[in-house]
Image (cartoon, rainbow, N blue to C red):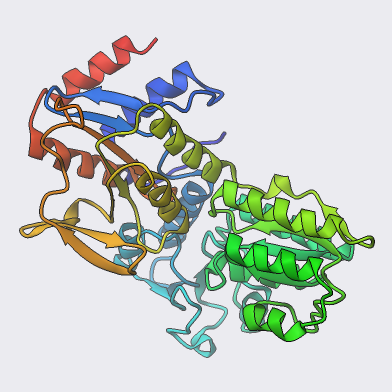
Length: 409
């Protein structure tokens, strides 16, 4: 896989050494057990995979190139380039302006743009409608298009399904940029429907298996989440399921299996195999988190990343089923009154005076699991790791890394 030119301040000397050693020993990524660093007073387990994925590094490289190549010109991002506050803030500090917020609300009127302006398409992609509006203004939307190749793969598969008269069921968060873009592209060739979770998939499947007479019940759940002219009585016979690439792979598979069961019960039904739309990076990060849990987990987990990051939130969900878990943006969440962290279920910040245990569950040395989402810089993870070490103290970092490199077989 190609390497990208990203700013050095996003990299981490500690994480780079750990990842390099694991990659050298396991280039095909078959081993999902965590990397353990023993600092004497605390053991830190780093998930096998975390941090910037291919699509994010590609987007960062293109975005910074756009800044470098266009001094003096106005530069805009359609919305947040990725869901990480550090990356977005740094681009803004270099003069990049956001045209929309993450929900699609216009922050700067598009009518103010012209052919001389530079527009960067974020990693989530853009809707067909938005691209067409920009093209009419003479804006080049392709020169700095950072859409993730794996997102585009989902678009192509969706378009193929629509062209073959299949309805595309999109597993995703209805308001997420990527879901909106995938929905728009799917609608170009056929019909689409957004399902946000397993409960909605179960409702949909039961409705499909029933007499399909109570159309109002269908619209009570899916109003505003189908393509124009969608007829649930007719357009749920030939179906394929794709995903917003950052959802839990197991959830998407469960939804696909349940919808397939409903389709197969229909004598006129046909289900399309869409397993190939699952993102490799999302799968690897989730598998690595599960691998850490299977390896004994830890006394506490720290998940690092943007609070509006979908893929990061799913790592939090996996960890909190097994141990106390704290979702932190970065090391700046360590404040005088404690650690500020995001409670996804309450949708708000909360404060824990001291989340790091003084002893492990067995009374011995505590173990801390650290991982991050695909949009989080390794440098952020290192700074959080150093916060952990500042609390516990212990052995010299370089000595621990040298021992880790030597003992890995």
